[in-house]
Image (cartoon, rainbow, N blue to C red; front, side, top):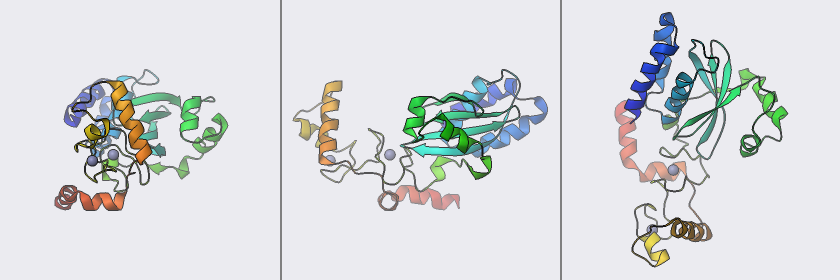
Length: 223
Ligand SMILES: [Zn+2]
Ligand SMILES: [Zn+2]
């Protein structure tokens, strides 16, 4: 699936990027070829160029990250643009010179008001480069929850608080609800309530690495 997305982006770039700079744009893209977050952002940008003129992404900076949702600044020839990205999609939030920001966005990342985000945006020297998230050992490789954060509900790496197995795979959800199948939203919601009451097990990068030897192997072969 990431491969398909990559090919789609390359196609979009043919129309969006000035010919002389296509190679430069592609080199950056390829750094993120295995990263759903990065690819979603590239896809959003090259599908809908903010200035509706030829442009290319020069770099990505990470502004904030919470619960698998990333606030990223894409720096391009024509400007700097803010995107909200998760592993499903990227959403364009405007140029970094914008005065007013979405309230829900501000609240989610803990900014008291638009001014406080603008203050942060005014000092790009302090931004970290956005690195492909799958390479970050401190993040859940599937849903990108950070240490101590809860996984996105349904993440296959979440550990079951009842049996210690894989929550999406063990039988505890059926046992807890006393049924063989879970079909409706209200059943899922009831299970979520029971799960919250029992206490969800947050992502823990140290334990996680130990319990997923297959991923360790993969990393090893990459060298
Ligand atoms: Zn997860
Ligand atoms: Zn279980």
